[in-house]
Amino acid sequence: MTTSRRNLIASLPLLLLCLFASPSRSIDDFHQAFPIVEPDPGHTKLRLSREGLEAIRRIKNPIAAVAVIGPYRSGKSFLLNQLLSLSCDEGFGVGHMRDTKTKGIWVWGTPVELDINGVKTSVFYLDTEGFESVGKSNVYDDRIFALATVLSSVLIYNLPETIREADISRLSFAVELAEEFYGRVKGEDVAFEPSKLLWLIQRDFLQGKSVQEMVNEALRRVPNQDGDRNIDQVNQIRESLAIMGDNSTAFSLPQPHLHRTKLCEMKDGELEQLYVSRRDKLKDLVSSIIRPKIVQGKSMNGEEFVAFLEQILEALNKGEIPSTGSLVEVFNKAILERCLKIYSEGMTKLNLPLTEESVQDAHGRSRETAMKVFDEQHFGRHHAKRSVMQLDEEIDKVFKHIIMANEYQSAKLCEALYSSCEDKMDQLQVLRLPSMAKFNAGFLQCNRSFEQECVGPSKAVYENRMMKMMGKSKSQFIKEYNHRLFNWLVTFSLVMVVLGRFIIKFILIEISAWILFIFLETYTRMFWSAESLYYNPVWHFIVATWETVVYSPVLDLDRWAIPVVLIIAILLLYWRCYGRRKHGSRWLLPVYNTTKNGTNRPRTD
Image 1 (spheres, rainbow, N blue to C red):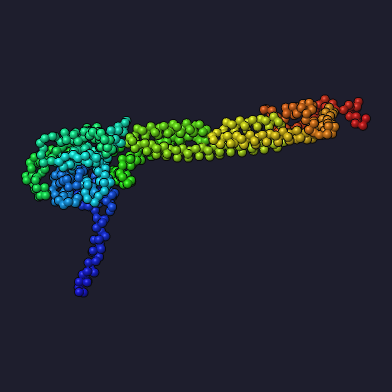
Image 2 (cartoon, rainbow, N blue to C red):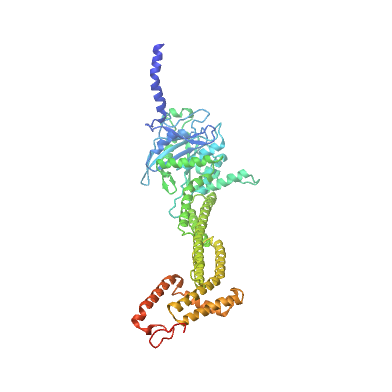
């Protein structure tokens, strides 16, 4: 007992090592079948089998796939083993019980290498779970069929004996794919190429109608005098499949042997020779029609094929029922992003802010360019309308951001111009030498620059603010203008009296200054207020003279007032100190009469 316990304890590390190492082991032997897609526990949707994807992912050549579909217990796995020249023991599992042997989709891990039009191509063979088996929903069958249809380059529809109406209905998804994707070649864009549909009918006797005649008859429109909706739907499928005639082939295969349960034990010599001959022709037929899988204009290697499989599976599992619409969305996703990028790049080149009309025109041009690219490259015909609507919605979102950015930039620019004009008006309010001409010139310049530079949706709002601000500023300036000018003239007259009496000693200047001072002071007292003076013609003359002296486009006395005053003061000082001594009396202004001995007569005389 103790020895057994010791052996058990000693073996535990080894058991744990094996237990944890087994899930992560790499596949060394690819000469076997692997599941790539399995049913979920509810047997309604599909999920990937990572182990089987390694067999595909390692391939660097362009990939093609041959998928066999059909009812359960119809010999699909045996057929694939025959096409691959494999026995039942080493190939796909073959069951003889009533339940289906294959679950989901399986792949033979070693591809068949073919040279197709000079291109080395790796051909994988896919075995699919049969239709109409017990315990499955129709939705699950539809997903299996849809996935096999999209992945394969050649789709072998394996049917026993004859073609039933239910078998035609199964092809509705293939018809929708054909209507949405196939035959779309514009410019350099290559279509998502369809799988070649191979009708394979296995029957005991090959006499009578050929399989092609059977297919043509099965696809012939059935009269529907009672207006049965189901018959109409099947007739539409029939018509579409007839149109796809160039993409389909019919082939017949006799039964390999009467004892079908012992087929796996038989060699080629024991099988019906007609079967062996037809089987070899079927191999040649498959090899002749197969092409590398083309998606969005290019073939795919292993990594790309697996990524494509993941995309398709996600789309098929997306809704309750698999639809071509979900596939269209998957294929158009990259094109939508590319078209949206084209639109965004066109709009980001705009030098905002712009007028609303300019932004709208740019939006129209960029949208038209993006839609043109989408129209040239998109997949799907009927379901593409949804993708167009989605692109329109995304474009509208970007356009709204552009509108918001334009409004922000417009408000920012107009606010800066408004603030600049407001500062300019404030500066004009406090001129050292009040000038209506200078105020009007600044007013017009500010208004002109605002009109020219302020653009965009915020212009109307800021125009109203500008009108109110500048109107208020102008009214305030006019109101203060006469009062300030009056005060300036009174001060100026007193200054000139002093200059004319004591510095220059020019009697005319002194007299003129006294006259101006007396006029300003006495008029306001005679007529009770200074406002009455502003309507006097003499005042208008004084104002006109003041405006001429103070401001002109050539000389702005307000800016140069202090330098001019300083220069005049220096000149007067020089003249008073050195002018008479250097140049004699002839340079003196004739202010007063002089005596005979050359001295000035006192003012009291």
